[in-house]
Length: 112
Length: 114
Figure: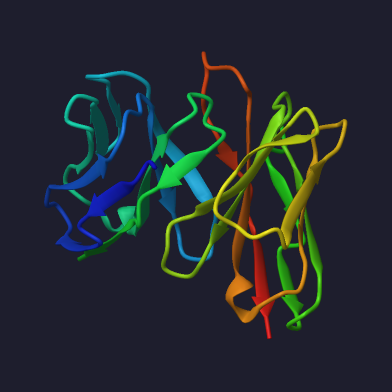
């Protein structure tokens, strides 16, 4: 059974600082997804990582995938308050994104 | 493109009642998956529908059932509601094409069981 673990569960960081969220998964999964969720809202797709060594960047966020280590990271550069949200990683056991296994989420709070 | 749409957005039901939630997938998508997200948790996979059939199922009891229509829209039905069924129910649509695996989520239905 595919299991996904994220850490940290909660992250409070000052504006301008850098930090990394880690996502480990238990079995083979060549596809890894990152989503953002604002309170009471749905999931917004951030990154789709489809192969080993994949790196994608959007603004202050950069995601990478190491399938050999079964690890994905979401790096935040020079955080701003607008990045405050809960971030989820999800692994895909089907190859079709139709059955995602999510981590517990990392609640990010960026303070002034 | 309206994206994935769900209805209703909020719902309050009494224990023991039955509820039906609806989802219209993103245009061009043929697969609908349902997830339950309890407060403070990550979404949990309920089941997936493709070609009007349930193809995969998570660890949810038979009280949870669904349907997919020829236009790819889908319903989630929950019978004999329990307090523990209170959650945000998310619908995701995707295209069953391994060349482009991406799931898009609707805004969710917030179900409260009292």
